[in-house]
Figure 1 (cartoon, rainbow, N blue to C red):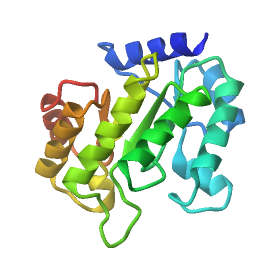
Figure 2: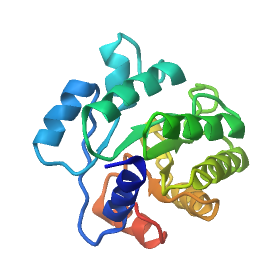
Figure 3: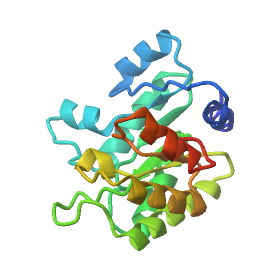
Figure 4: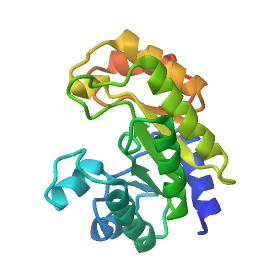
Length: 203
C-alpha cells in the first residue's frame, strides 16, 4: 500500500462500527510480530521507545522518535501512527511541525497530548491546549491525504480525575479539528460511556 492507501485504511478503521484494536510496537521487530498476528494497523509507544534506549518516558527527542517510527513504517505494509508526545515543544508551531515531520517519514496518523512535561503545570492551560490542537489539525489536514490526528487529554494518567474538565477539553479539541480523541486513564465504563456520548468523533 502507498501512504494514501494506508491513511485511508486507518481512517476507515477508526470510523468503523466495531471495536478497533491497535497494538504499540516499540521497534521494527515487534512491529513485524504484531503484523504477523493479524493486526490491521499499528501505533508506536513513546514509553516503549524511551525504555529501550534507557530514558524515562518524555525523555526522547523528536528526531529519535521519528527515526524509530520510520523503521517501523518500513518494516511492515500496514498503516502506522505514532505517539508524538506533546509535539516536542510547548508552542502551537511545534505541534504543527511534528505532524508534518511525521507525515514526511511515512506515518499516516499521530497523537499530540496536552501534558506539558513540566511538574509545575502538568497540563497546558486550556487556551494554549486548544491552540496547539488547532495548529496540529491544520497541519494534518493540509497534507493531501487523510492523516488521522489524535488529540489526547492526559488528565487521568496524571492524577487530575476531573471528568468535566476532560470532556470540556475533548469537546474543544474536536471543535479545533482533531479527527480522533483519546483520554487515557478513564477508570470506569460509565466514565468512558459519558465521554463517548459527549463527542461525535472516534474515541
